[in-house]
Image: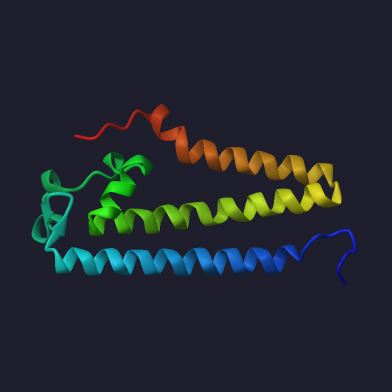
Length: 139
């Protein structure tokens, strides 16, 4: 039975967010793969270089960040569509946690607000800060 104080059914909203995030991610990755084949590569790499097992030719994902996405998408570069699809997949659970925080604030459940905020902090820290501490540099 639904609590009268709840603004929405959190499970239903979380389910929609997860389904939408995964389906959007899959669509973007498929579009990116199609563009890679149509344009025979992306980011200045040919398709044979991208698919090569040679370590020197590998594309380092550290050079793909959120600030370069708009120009890559504008130029219909398949690698950027794939990158955006992966970012959507990463931010899908973050959206679920944010939705949970909103629901817990609405019902004034302080314990779960704090716990959800800790989870959100950990996710954001892992996504944006952890790689800086590990000191991964592109070749």
